[in-house]
Each structure stands twice: as structure tokens, then as C-alpha cells.
Image 1 (cartoon, rainbow, N blue to C red):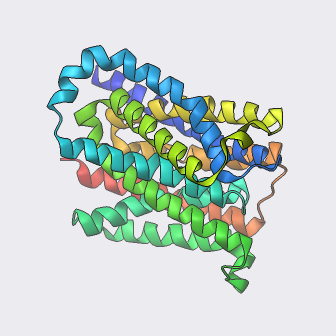
Image 2 (image 1 turned 45 degrees about the vertical axis):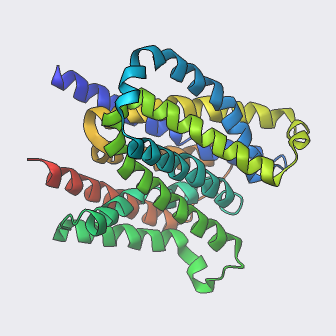
Length: 307
């Protein structure tokens, strides 16, 4: 039975990573029709929210007694996790994709496991092995290769550097979310945690939009924008959000991060086919270094946690 759960966890992690990797593609396709980032994020959340409300109502009957026993600090932590992982991280990602390509975005975002390792070192005092330190260094050398010729003109006036910094911020907030989710999922259960945190994040986005935009503007976009956001909400948000949390529940956040290495390859391939994006040869070298470094970091984190 344990082997079956392990196999299911691996399958969930792989499929979830592949589906999540389509998000940046849908965002870039929608940006072709002159929509701003908060409006695009709101449409994604509006299409996703009914699914999460349905799941909350579906499990409420069997989970209500358990929910009432959960301490207030854990509910507050869930809201903080939702704000970090699904609202702020999503907003930074969408803002960053206004300035850089989907391929580069995915490679920068993929270094989030290195931030998990750094957070674990400073917050939980987890020891960093020599191999892990070398892998961290390899990941960031790879990142320098991805930045490539842009290193000769580092400036906040540059669209590339604006986008890169925003995506780095997204990677940090997503790492914080994953650290918190590994602590919270056992308390709420994967389905409850995902449904409630995503519903909360949807409300955060709606509030942000109401303070910054006019609602009437949501109905003026090209029909393809609504098609892309619906696809983003289902294929790249709802389905993988449950799948990945089920994977974390079965095999842990670290092993899930290892299997997520298929994500950058998938995004780069889709960006090539659908967006006509091309990585420079030096950036391809950087991609290989990042994937190798992040995989080693993740393996080392998993090995250290084994009894």
C-alpha cells in the first residue's frame, strides 16, 4: 500500500508540474490582447473560484467537526500562506511576464527550492551540506547564464531586469508558501487546505481589483482573453493545485520539487512552439545548470530529513 501511495505521489507531482508549466504560456497569449496584469489575474481567479467553493461545500459535511478543532493560529497561518502563495506570488508572476518571456520566467521561478533550503537554514537551523552548498552555487551560476548578455547593463529601467526581479520575488514568496503548506496540509488535509486557501486568495485578488480598476472594464476584452483565462483557471490552476498538494501529502514537498524539474523543459518547449521564443545557447547552458543544481539541492534536503 505504501508503494502504491508513493507511485501515486510521483505521478501527481509530474502531472501537476506539467500542467502548472502551461500557466506562463496562457498569460503571454492573453497579453497579446492588451490586458493588464491585475485584470488578467482577476479573470483567472473568477473562473477558478466556483471550483474551490464547490469543493469546500462538498467536504464541509465531513470536515466541519475537524475544522472547529483547528486552532485560530493555524487558520491565520492558512490565510498568510494563501496571501503569499496564491495572491502575491501570482501577482508578481503576472507582472513579471509583462517584461520577459515565458521560458526565462520559468527558469528563474524554478530556483524556488534553493530558497526553501535557505529558509530552512536560517529559520529551522537545518545544516547545509557541502554538496548542497555546491548545488546552490551551481543553480545561481546557471541563473547568471540565463541573464546572459543582460548582465552588461544591469538597470531597473530595463524591462528584462524589472521582469526578472519580479519573478525572483515570486520564487521567494512561493518558497515561503511551500514551507508553510508542508506544516499546514497535515492539519487541514490536502483538499481542505487547497480549497480554502485558493478561495481566500481569490477574495484577496477581487479586493485588490476593486480598489484599483473599474469592474465595467472586465467585459471589453477580446473573446480569446476569456478563453485563455478559462483554460488557465482549469488546466493551469485548479487541477494542478489539487494534484500537487496531493503529491506533497504522499511524498513530501522536497521530492515533489525534484520531480518538478520537468516543468522548465515543458515551458521552454511550449514557448518555442506557441510563442516562437528562442533561448540563446548561453541561456540553454544556464537552464541545464539550474535544473541540475536545483535537483541536487532537493535530493539533499530529502536525504537529510530521512531517519
